[in-house]
Length: 357
Image (cartoon, rainbow, N blue to C red; front, side, top):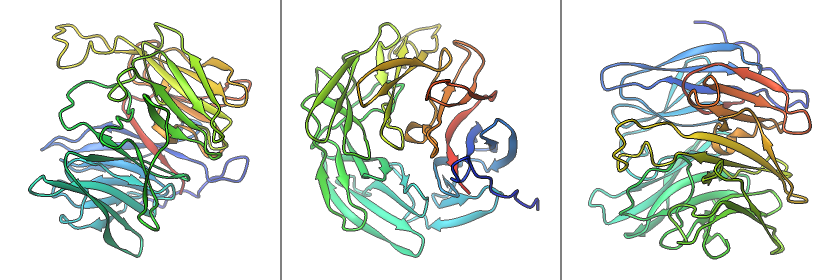
């Protein structure tokens, strides 16, 4: 077996990231693949994915996947695979999975066999899988994000059918909730009325997207930053670049916020009836949270690549062009402060996160 290369570090001493891109999605009878790239764009390794494998998340030293038999596994950077759960405790059904930032714990929500309730489960290194909470329907939970500020659970409308280019929250049936993984305590996240929660910064500031209907999808071309003291800054976004909005993620130090936009939304949806669908064209702006100034950022057609992991630990930002609208598909690892310079990785596939060891 190939010996893994030494773990590099960034200029500030943090572990250098290995960007993880799913370059081929497995089918029921054909394998897939994951490709690892260094931050400067060098191909490091290609890892195989067996047929019917689903990539769930990436954190720390683990790529979390669900096998064809429902087992939860982790793939390491050297290709070694570890078993993390049995078929009875693997994340199945509604709810997905979110790992802690260091990848040592993981949480998911799963419905009961009789579909009358849903429970939230926690597993991890040295932990016996345990149930943190159970909710009766119509509450349907989705593990949205695990950040240093806590675990965020979204509440989904059971009957929603639609197409969304961004993973925005819904906040139905009780709104977005914050869960303490140590105590199991669950509290509602205090966002303004009719504003869709997106992220919370280290200082307690919240980013959300105004919506006339209160949940489902953003219906206004704007983003709000709600300071921990209650002050609200609402920023209008340019149209048509931001006909649809999402991907509001704070930088690690909370000084900046991404916001992404898309045009042509709905042309690719099953409900559109469009015989010749065209892909969305994406755009990214960055907001300076101190003064609310907003700037256009990155190459044409790009969006934050990996939700909150789009921000690397050293403050650089990874953008993704998923198709040929605006240029060749690929990733961009960019310095958002001043120059915006960085590296380009020409790759076709879906970025899913980064490894730090």
